[in-house]
Structures are given as C-alpha cells and as structure tokens.
Amino acid sequence: MTAVAKTVDRTRFLRLALVVDAVVTGGNGLAYLTAAPLVSEFIGTDVTLLRGIGAFLTVYGLAVGFLGTRRTVHRAATQAVIGLNMAWTLASILAVVTGLLEFTTVGAVWAIMQALTVAAFAELQIIGLRKTGVK
Image (cartoon, rainbow, N blue to C red; front, side):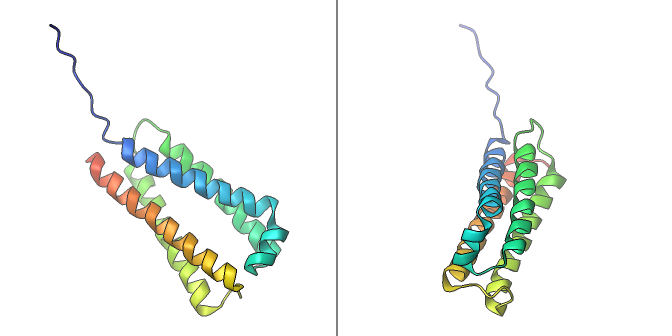
C-alpha cells in the first residue's frame, strides 16, 4: 500500500470569502451603474453619486476578486480589503444616522442591510486570514 500525502489548503476559506465579497460587490456596482435612475428613485440618492459609487464598487469588486483568485494569499492586501470593508460599513451607518444622503426609508434600510453584509464579509475575511496562519 502506498501512502498519499494530503495537502491542506489553509487559504481556501479566505479565498472563498474574498471571491463571494467580489461577486456581491461587483454585482451591486454594476446594478448602480446600469440602473442608477431607477435605483435612485427607490433609495433617494443622486443619480450622479450613485453612478460614481457604482463605478467604485465595480472596480473594487474586480480587485477583490483578483486577490481572491491568487494562489498566494497576500496578507497586506487582504488587510486593506478588511479595512476598506470596515470603513464602508461605518460610512454607510453614518450616512443614515446623520441624514447626509437624504435616503428614503427604503434607502436607509438598504444602506443598513448593505453595511451589515459588508461587515460580515470583513469578519469572514478576518477569520479566513487567521486560519491561513500567514503572519
């Protein structure tokens, strides 16, 4: 009988968390870009702002997706994603609480739900980074 060495991929969870974040973020960005006038009516933000956010989210989603599909985990880049996700979460909550963007009720609920989703991605990425053992 021959022994087969089993290799454990300690980055799998992290890469999955990054890729799912990328798909959701990029999809959201594309929706904002392509349907800005319609989305704007529901959530109450300016069409131009929404398109700018859509462009940012699309590019950000592509970058996070690229990071998540690499064979090697880049700790600093992953930490940057986590930091940006946390910043997005806080900015979204502040935008609702301060009334800065004058959301509709639907828009305020959407922004909070989106913030919670992004916070969950950050938490999954933190857990994934810890699982890798990469220092």
